[in-house]
Image (tube, rainbow, N blue to C red; front, side):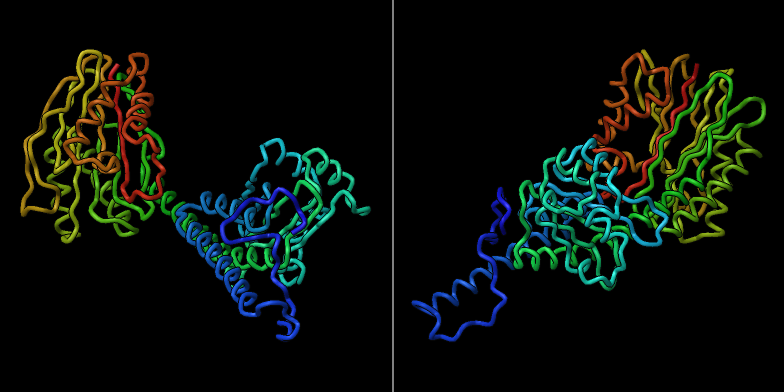
Amino acid sequence: MSAPHLPKVAGIDPEVPVSTQTAAPLREIPAAPGAFIQDRLAGWVSDLTTLHELTERLAATATLDAALNELLHAGAALVGARRGLLVLERAGSTTPSTTLGLGLGPADLGHLETVERSATALGRILDGPPEAADARDGIATPDLLGDQDLDPRHREVATRLGYAASYALPLASEAAGRLGGAVWFYDEPGEPSEKQRHLVGLYARYATEHLARLTELERARADIATVADELLPSRLPRIPGVRLAARHRTGPQGGGDWYDALPLPDHALGLAVGSVGGSGPSAMAAMGRLRASLRAYAVMEGEDPVAVLSDLELLLRLTEPARTATALFAYCEPAARKVVLAGAGHTPPLILGDRRCEYVETTLSAPLGMLACWEAPSVEFSPAPGETVLLYTDGLLRRTGDAMDRAFARLHSAAASVPKAGRHDPAAVTDHVLRAMLPDGLDRSDSTEDVVVLAAHFD
């Protein structure tokens, strides 16, 4: 490798390329032939060990963004560069392309985008025929500024960003096809050695298969989230005297947590949250059926939450005897500041105001589908002006990773710490509670739990 500033990578010595010639006869090998062979074998073992470590790190990535970052960094170490650019754009896909830079800021990426793709090695890899030999093996440009035929805009950008050579490699394999390409930049003229090209090529082929799997996984997760969103309210109703806000995230496998808010006769409001047992498409379908049924029962007899849940339990037991679910339904009269609710094995609501922050005491009850005949008394309370009633599913508690008693205490602390300036905004209340409960955010890919939070603020 002739490029300077090469990083130190365990197991790879870029100054000692692997010879492509057949081993010389013993009489031509100076000194001890055994030592020479041992050095060669030690070099191969070291290179393979490094390659194994890099692929292990790549395999440990669970998201597409993490895998792309790992690929860029590992590739830079293998070819002896410190900056790079990766573009992911699967042929025939409607998904927007993904561009990621290593050692390049947003302004640098903007400058690179002003260069015609056909004038760059990466562009030829992305737009050229997949079977092109130079695209499969990578394209080295050892002296960009010395190339008389270089595109003037490309020369201007290279001078501005301070790179003098590049090595571009496709992200392609027989099974996955071509997913995109990567290019690494050198500060001075140079190109990877034959050994470095071989190692980064092996790594890139494995990375392509891994990226293809993660791409399909993220597409499936996006489809699941879209279906879950379609099964939930597209908008929240506007009822005089109360303002609503909701937050919902579906787990990567798809779950059965849901919420609902529907206007009822005489300016009343019905609020519901629930969770169907299980995960995956079947749980999502059951959730949709359960929510639709509860809406019908709420319109007919919403002023009696116990009757609503009793009807729902009977329907579940007759139509899906192997299914269980928790649910909570609240009948609200904002003008009278009256809330009547009943719960079936569901977590208790939390009421938050300037003078109190406490759980609403609900009676102990079994989930729907657990008993031959479900019934539990209702609970009535009166929220004061400016108070917010918080309904949620147990996924919010389980995502914390704490024991349930500690998770309940953590939720109470999160609600009590809502700033006074935001207590009259249900959206601000839900966002603050979520940030306090889940500092890593709602979109953690390693959690299988759904999360639902529904806030009703009484003016």
